[in-house]
Length: 338
Image 1 (tube, rainbow, N blue to C red):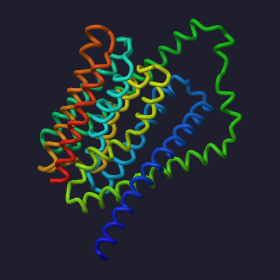
Image 2 (image 1 turned 120 degrees about the horizontal axis):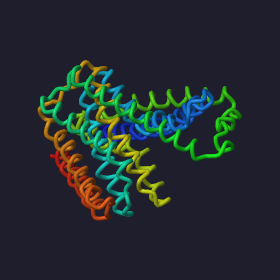
Image 3 (image 1 turned 90 degrees about the vertical axis):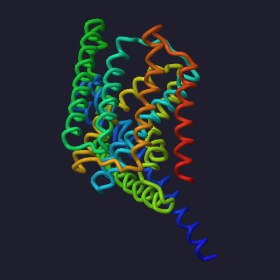
Image 4 (image 1 turned 60 degrees about the vertical axis):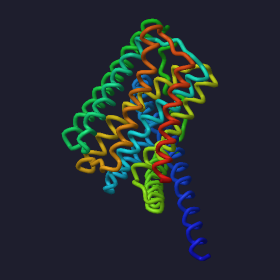
C-alpha cells in the first residue's frame, strides 16, 4: 500500500512539474517577446525588421530553451527529440488542423522561398541524423542555414518597408514608436528579466520532470520528447493557428509554422549540437526519430503539391496531415506501453 501511495504521489509531482514547466515557458515567452519588441522599437529598429527577427524567434522560445538547456545538461536525446518532434507536430497536427477547417488561396511569391528553406533544412537534418550523430560540423552547417534565413527575412522586410514608404503619405510615415515610449522603462525591463527567468526555470523544471517520467516508464527521454514535450512546446504555434482560424487567415498560421520549423531544424538542432559537442542518436531512438522527420517531409509534400498546381490549399490536405500525426502518435504510444 505504501509503495502504491508513493508511486501515485511521484506521478502527481511529475505531472505538476510538466504542467508548471509549460506554463512558465509559455507566459515567460510572452513577457520576453513583448519586452523585446518594446526595446527594439524605442531604439528605432523598423517594425518590419522586428517582425522578421524578434517575433519570428519568439514563438519558438519554448523549443529553444528546452533543447538548449537539455543539451547543456548532456541530455542530447531530449534536445534533438524536442526539435524533431516539434517540426512534425507543427506541420502535421497544427497546420493540418488549420487547413482542415479552412482552405486558402496562397501567395506563391511569399510562400515558396520559406517552404524551400524549410524543406531543405529538414532534408539536411534527416541526412545528418542517418549517421546517428550530428557533430560540430553538421551543427555549424545548420546554423549557417539559420543565418541565411534570418538575412533573407531582414532583407525582405526592409524591401517591403521601402515599398510601403513609396506608396504612403508623409503622415503615415511618421514615427510609430511614440506610443511605446509611454510605457515605463523600469516595468518593461523587469518584464524582460522576468520573462527570461520564467523560461529558464520552466525549461529546467520540464526537463527534470520528463527525465523522471522516462525513468519510471523505462523508456527513452527522446520518445517522450518527440511526443509530449514537442506538443507542449508547440503551444504558441497552436494559439497562433487558432487565432488565425478565428480571423479566417490561414496564411498567418502557415507562415508562422514554416518559420518555426526552419528554426527547429537549424537554430535549435544546430545550436544544441554545438552546446553539447554533438548530438548522438541511440540505437533504440533511431527509428522513431527517422519516422518523425520522414513523416514531416511527407506532410510537407502533401502541403506543397496543390499549392504548386492550383495556388491554393484544400481541406482534405489538412485531414491527411492530421492522420499522419495521429498514426505516428499511436505508434509511439505502443512503443511506450509495450
